[in-house]
Image (cartoon, rainbow, N blue to C red; front, top):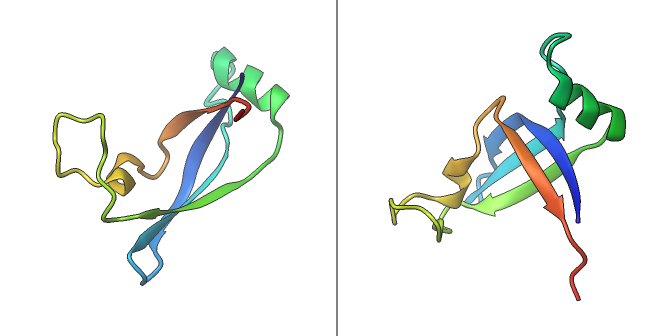
Length: 86
C-alpha cells in the first residue's frame, strides 16, 4: 500500500447530480508541521479530481441519509490509500 495526503482545493456541483471534488498534495502549515512536510517531499505535485454522485449515501456513518459528497469540505485534508486491485 502507498499512502498520500491531499487537501480539497475546490468543490462544485456539475449540474448533473454530481459534486466535483478537486484535491492537491498537502502543504505544511508552518515549520513544525512535520507530517505534511514529509508527505509534500514524497508527493511534491499532483491533482485528483473526482465526481461523486450526490445521491450516493455513505455506508459507514451513523447518519444513514448523509450523502458521500458531503464528506468532503474545502481545505479538508484526507489520506489517500492506494493498494493494487487483484
